Length: 85
Image (cartoon, rainbow, N blue to C red; front, side, top):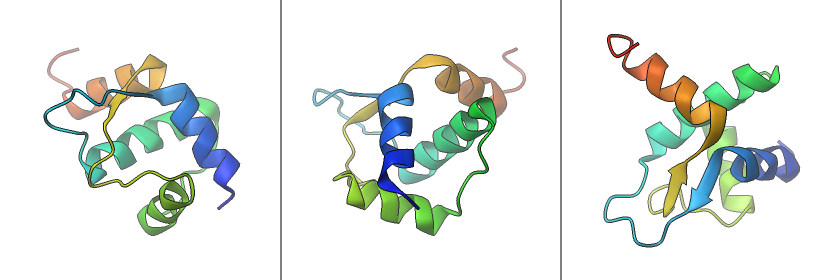
C-alpha cells in the first residue's frame, strides 16, 4: 500500500492531540479508515496492510495520539452506534 494513501487518510480524517489521555485504539483507527475509504470511493486495504502503512507514516497505532475529524469521523460514529442516528 502506498504511504500516500495512508497519509491522505491521516490528513483528511485525523488530527494530532497529544493531550489525549486515551488514544484511539487500533480497531477504532481501522474503522475510521474503512469509513474514510467508503466516502472516498476507495477499497479499504486489509488491517495488516493498513497497520504497515501507518508504520511507514510514523504512526504507532497502539499510541497514536490522534483524534477523528471530518466526514469520516461522523460516518464511523454513526456506523458504530446506529441507535444514535
